[in-house]
Length: 244
Image 1 (spheres, rainbow, N blue to C red):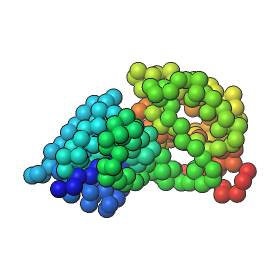
Image 2: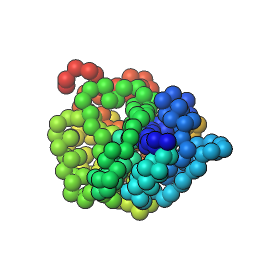
Image 3: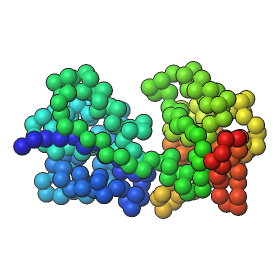
């Protein structure tokens, strides 16, 4: 039996946003590997083994998937959102680079709907023109790199989507992010806080940059900062497609 690894995005949380391609891969799988809450979204069935692990062992998780596939298993590595956006696809290829005996493994990356895109859709169209995504966690990169990217994106007048804005272990990072943005952007710039996007308890809160506070964000929140042309139309926020 020839094994394979599929790296799948489960979307932002609502099962209706899981793609048919991902659903089909899960149905064929012999093994599911992933972070505990993501694996919990997969229904147990006969012939399927669930491997749930902590969030800080991505490379171990990726190597486990490759080793199982080399033994003939059909492995789905699950991520939330899209697996190529701050998620497991990069980790799997990093494991392949470190263990070249797995270079010929059949690896398939199955796209999903990111929290950033789900949040933008819920708000209206704040990413309607050029934008960038920045992970505010400093676990894998130093703060000075984050600050540099924030300043360059602001000076380029990009709309920005922020992942992992504020955690219990990093309560001050988002405060520093807001300070940087206020130095680079006008105070009336619109910023949207989308929490638990696509889930039953979803909340959206759009304020000006001057009104934003660190407590408006947590690890379940995607934050979207508009560009200088982003507007509020009733309860919707959108960025015109023409250059500002």
